[in-house]
Length: 275
Image 1 (spheres, rainbow, N blue to C red):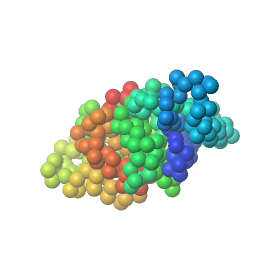
Image 2: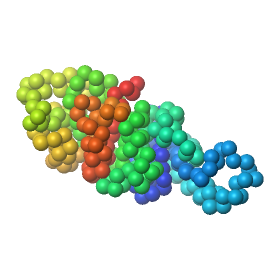
Image 3: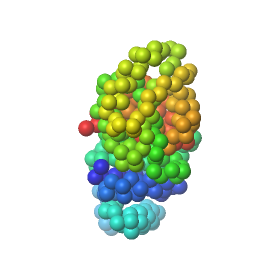
Image 4: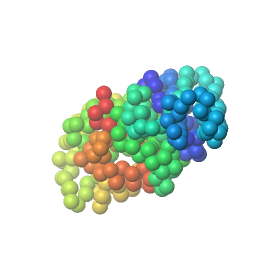
């Protein structure tokens, strides 16, 4: 993990995401890149310098934003971290813009039950769904910034072995215990020995003593993940994603949003196409 991208709108939940990103960067000795997407009434890049004075409110907003970004950069450097900032005049798809930075990790804030609408517009949802890099969604400042308990919920199919390595790397950074979780549902019921056989292949990838196998019966995926996570008092929930189609063979896009909105824990999502 060399570079962590932190999209921010300077709200409270975005500030919580910054706190988590600083902790991660310190542990990984990673460079932080703070980025703010600013909507402007015209294409600011194509605007001539003498025309800018026609938009005093935008000029004020640009100045205030640059000052806020500089403050974040200073905060990181006081911790001995390398940091840089970018102010992007947003006239494109935010998911494509984020992917252009090719960061190793993305940390973004969300207002939880209010959805993504007040953090970088409704675009944060697109970051989660389309980002090629692992994304950590933070709502409130976690009670435990060390992330000692991590739940990895999956169907444990073959195609999620590679992204699982990213989750292992994140867990290793915090020396976290990983709880492998399969939610067994009435309409997708599997017998215990069949599920455990699939999960054993993932258990073999875990350093000795770092992973546990768990099967939880529930009416649906979200309910099972939530109830199990609450039962063990998890610090973070990790899942693999499949771009436009949501979590691999397990969680539809609507469930993705619902988990992020309703879970008290931060959500870590890793695209199965990540390298």
